[in-house]
Amino acid sequence: MIKIAPSILAANFSKLAEEVKEVEKAGAELIHIDVMDGHFVPNITMGPIVVEALRPVTDLPLDVHLMIENPDLYIESFAKAGADYITVHVEACPHLHRTIQLIRSFGVKPGVVLNPHTPIETIQHVLEDIDMVLFMTVNPGFGGQKFIHSVVPKVQQLSTMIKEKGLKIEIEIDGGINAETIIPCAVAGATIFVAGSAIYSQTDRTAALQEIKEAGER
Ligand code: DX5
Ligand code: ZN
Image (cartoon, rainbow, N blue to C red; front, side, top):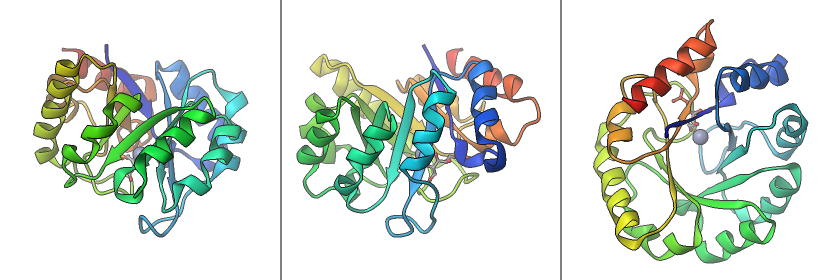
């Protein structure tokens, strides 16, 4: 079962509510919200007030991707704003168990994100504590970048590790996903796919979303 999480980073911010409703109607399973602080990544986007504003707009789970330093300082605000998933970068979390426990203490599902070059061994000892692993297939910071193929073997490795341990963890992929790049990732065991520009740059968002999903399900 393939789930699509459109990234609103590529949406038209002057009519964000409509943009979210449109992809919900088109068959999206989650809404991906990219939070950037200008420190962990060289770009600044949105904060908890956007999550709060979108919460009543959609019934879909809000998947909040924190590309920020010191995420512990902001987890409570994002949780109270209505996040369903909060994912934090392993590269930004020196006390990863504490951060994961903090997310869960607010009733939010915790996930950990790996940059393209970060090995999966860095999260080996938290697998029992998380609901999601998010693999970056671009260097985070901007939408519309080119998919990095060398991440796919890591996805396969983690997928095998999860099965061997008998764990239930979603594998999500983020960056450069379209109807072609989804295929090797789905084969490798990923189940949730973020797509920003591949959906929001198209006039027919339903056709774009369905084409990506069908490619992943083949
Ligand atoms: C990148 C963000 C992504 C981005 C994906 O830093 O985390 O979620 O919006 O955009 P596309 O699908 O255009 O690569
Ligand atoms: Zn993202």
